[in-house]
Length: 372
Image 1: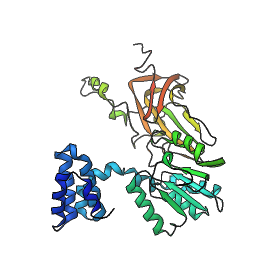
Image 2: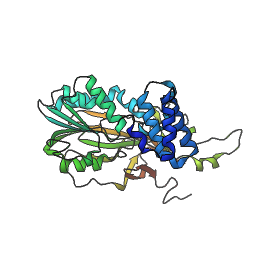
Image 3: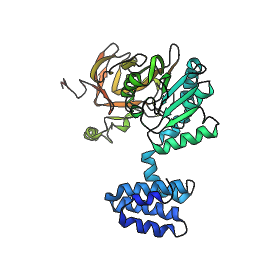
Image 4: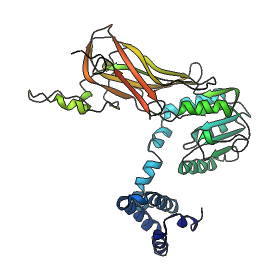
């Protein structure tokens, strides 16, 4: 889009002001300041404010004032976890090893979720004939194209600025792919619509017998309890005063604290969800289910901790089970009230899972069947 084209997209009463600002020094800074003022003072002009912020950043991407004034827009469009993910060496190493095992010379590779372009570049560097990679966020897609060009791989990688379910065979992809690699999982496993994306890819974009990486995904977890970290949603009171009524306002789920230790695990590890992506499926089951967690020792249970499990073929897995550190965060599902257990006790657990998130609870810790 040229420097003149985008102005016509803002409301008429703003076009004159923007044109005036263009004739002044520091146009990108003034444009960025205007975008921020519009966002706060005129919510009805939010789309125009976003456009002004985007154009200001495109004009002066390293100007510190522009960056500060437009941070509100870019933080929403490009979440900061992009930096955590691309700097997660453990994750990167597993994906690189998986691609080394499975990419063959001349193979057509499809990646869903370009991000920085890292996985597409690894596949191309390993000998893929061509890599098609899609990214629905235009700002991120442009970053990927730049990174790919910087590394001399632009002739072997095509970045498609669409969601995978909107890509068309014969238009966006010249042919079906022999291998699909993706990283579209979040802390809850399913929040980036990986199941729907896989179903669609198998139906329209992959060759029969294509390799999918990861080929299996799951959530695993354990019942946990610990005084050192549960202050995020519990209170022991103070000076003999009972303050526990505030616990009813505690969040039902929160990221795992760094202070969690191995002896905070009360139950054996258990599989909560599991999906085999290596074979075509019309749909993958979500919704509500149940499972049992068995206490391995006596203790007081505060909640259930879940973490990710990804498999990339036999004998190659990734997990962020503590104490492993990762860009993906294990999540604690806090029980409304503490549960005392002894070794061998079986805790009946329920899980509700879909693309909006995962909820896990113990039925007798404040849910159905509670008996005081």
